[in-house]
Length: 417
Ligand SMILES: Cc1ncc(COP(=O)(O)O)c(C=O)c1O
Image (cartoon, rainbow, N blue to C red; front, side, top):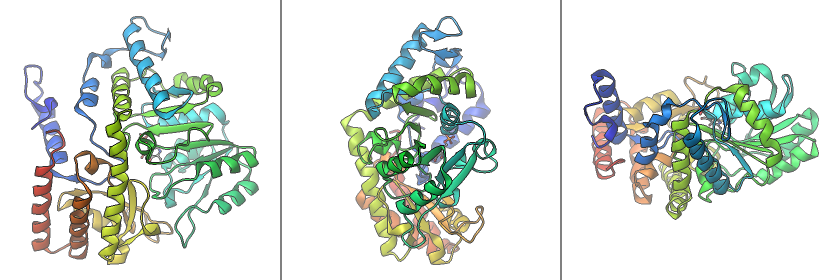
């Protein structure tokens, strides 16, 4: 095991927990991680989360805390906020959200009253559950309506979004998704929001690293509020963040604390600061570009093998594979790929006829495999293996051969060597 966290030492006495951590670390090394919302954070990012900062209560914000002894965590939070602002060119940043969902909750609370109308992307077409799922706080407290993709192109149709906005007259329009593989036209969304007198928010949770690295247009110049997660393409610790113009920060800050959270996770905020510095480097720009070129190569390879990709490809880190095109459900495909150590998740495709636990698609992403150094040539191999497994999911000879090939590749490209 190469990670320090699982190396036995005098302070690690809880054998049961450390054994499970060691197994998870080995699993990550041995499996090709194609879950589009995951990544492998650097050792330095992970190390910051294992520090004494976890002991510190710091309710409030730098210079205005409800606890004493905050002088050093203030330094850390200032570093994180300033780096976030520089990285994304935003006037203000709140780095305290514990997760993307909590960032969204605070963003909504900063501009909406319960019952207000919101227009966001349909969950069935790639949106996120914090954008109005009936069992999520968003759908419980606000009046969410949704737009979807065009049935033929499987892309957003901005004329339709505009028509819906004109008839609904929402207070907030949201762009951003969990499973949408095409560029989002933030300026077109902003124009629609302006036309109907709505505010405009972008949830860039998935593409934040691509935006940071210049591989996707930035929503920051167009949006009243931008939320994100720090652990997906941005490759930081698990957490969330809100970016906004200076005139909105007072409301955002108080919606987050005391509105939706108590004490911030200062050890995670330190890790966020480190990740933001990593994302400011030239090497991160190359990484972001490679995530996109790998995704495009993987989608091309799968399509050449006769497997349908929703909307005919991808321009970002993610693709939706219509495994119905090879006679499988998403659940069966996820399971078959898991048996050869390729990890992904079943996902609804637009206009899916199957229920979510079965689904007709799998969602694949290249953020994590690019971090461990896989390149365009590897994408050709990977597409071939995925195709073989999906076409013969019960054939033990195929599964054994592909599992061996995956082991050879993961052995050559360790994550934490
Ligand atoms: C678009 C979008 N927003 C918000 C979130 C929520 O993030 P978290 O799981 O940190 O609450 C996700 C997570 O997948 C997401 O894809």
